[in-house]
Length: 191
Image 1 (tube, rainbow, N blue to C red):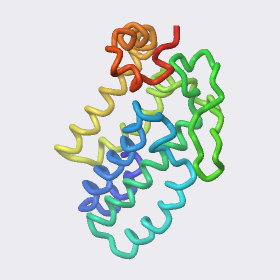
Image 2 (image 1 turned 135 degrees about the vertical axis):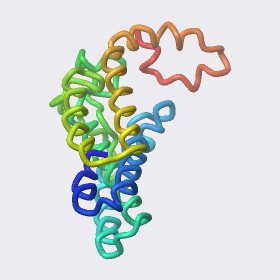
Image 3 (image 1 turned 180 degrees about the horizontal axis):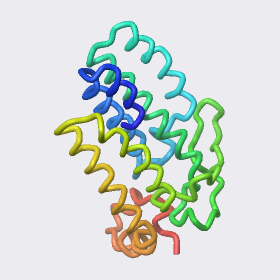
Image 4 (image 1 turned 30 degrees about the horizontal axis):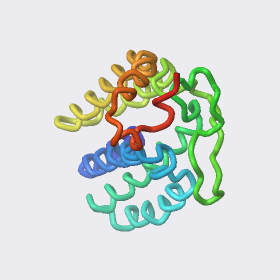
């Protein structure tokens, strides 16, 4: 959503489309959380490539639909690239034991984590989220303001609970009935 700030400032009537598109694109890759997380819907090469023509279309035909579509792809691209700069795909990424951040379908290999931000849900991760959200708050009105505040609140709660969630996951997912065990990501059964 923060990437929509230039649109919110320059063309306020298109801000809702840009913000909602950015929100949808930012969430989209993590819909694979229980089905090949950071592989199934994460495309760190393809989303940025797709963002070019869709963004050009939005510049040529600046309408809510084209702007929203552009920001869906831009948001998804930013999400995947930011995952590379965080920790690895593991239950406790602060331990730094995984060399898998995001799967690159073009190169057909896992990109390694850069650990610029220690891990998702870290204090640094929350600081970045807050830092990019606050300027946007000055340019949006209700109900988009509520969406941004709610997203930031969810991020804050996640950051406060992140380490505890890693300890709870093996307990919670260890109690999954046998027919459903195949759907539990392997990292949740780590001890």
